[in-house]
Length: 633
Image (tube, rainbow, N blue to C red; front, side, top):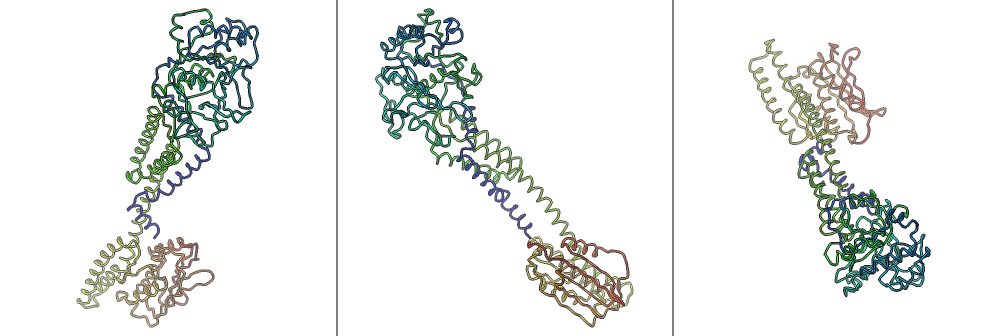
């Protein structure tokens, strides 16, 4: 019964109604995993991949790097580079009139000779910004006697995968909560805009961010994009890195070229009104950070610290001046609404396609569209949307639904085969217990010529009716899905009735049949069918038990020569149900196992019980089916 209901649901509603609950469960699990931070690494990977795949951008002429490389150290013949050389470098740079200079080299301890000379340069040129580290565990103090406006911190955060994607613009002073500390990049950006008459203000929609010319810089909140419970250094403002995608995003000049006055005319044009960053670009210092968001890096996944600060400055300038978007994300509600929409998409696809291969193709196409959409949104508008969770749900639900469809399709085919076999078997039983018995009776008396012609004609007219009734019953059987049973007598039983009532109907209807000659000699008819708890039986098993009783009684009418007494009982004894038919006829005349006996043995195995059919002493036959009640169906 349940199998037939399942098939009906599958045919009417397809796989969608069955696959939706596990699909929703996958969606809920992915969301829960994301909420606790289990998706961060995967979302970072997709973010880096999409940033890396963007088209190349033009170099930013507003930022220039003076990098101290290995050849500079060999040329100076001393490491660290003495303060005197740094002072000479800064003095030369000032002659080119840059707007601001960021010295990304720690100078809290003088490196003689030239310490006093360097301090004098700082005092005379207030557009030079020095650095410090303020966050534990590696605080480094700035040079003494410099005002706060000439100091910027360079603390950077690494994500759990050791990649650097964020930049802290400002934070509260760990030693003095009243004064904020500003990063090297923010100090230089502020100098740049101040010279242009532009003031940095607090944001309007978000007072904790920075607004420049009406543009608010999107800050990283606790749950920003793929981040969960992020720590920005305590009361500060971080931004997400939008690297300038170019093999050489900034002009890089060496220390020795500046000090040797090489290409002065070129540098005069290159450095004037620019932001200049001076820092180490050599492996010996260790000022290196990891990223996979930039293609074709010289260090294969590594970026110099001074280059990192240059990217921060460039992206702020490009946002305010050029309209290049900074990276931002939706609020939590928008992100999870997006994930839910894509979570239901494979379920809807499965409902619409109703085909394994079309479903797989549609899900793959949807995955490509999702990644492409995320890529375009990031590239053109700087919007970081949840791609990784949605792709996982698409993959799991899409492939899972397809596998489920394969399984259900195979299950449905096997079910159809079993139903056809059952229909064939049942049709044979109905024909065997009905028209064939009538035909056998008529042929027997036709050969013996011991009955009038009119009586034989009546038998064959009855045979015609029975065959037609079987055809009508089979049509009804298709519609009622095995909830009814047609006996050989033509009686139709509703199988949802109690089993002992059905057995009474089978007994009475069968013994009233006139096409079994040995029923005519019966003098005593005994029946006793105790109530049977049929909650342990399927509708199909109730059907087979009724047919067993009909078959056993028909055998009495066909073979029990000289029978005077028949007894049919069903009792519960010794933890078993026993359905038994006894007669006092001539007993079993043949040892051949007919089809009815084979079917009864098969039924006994299905019920987990036993079947026996044997002769009694001194005469008679017993046919018994017994089974133990099992689990509820």
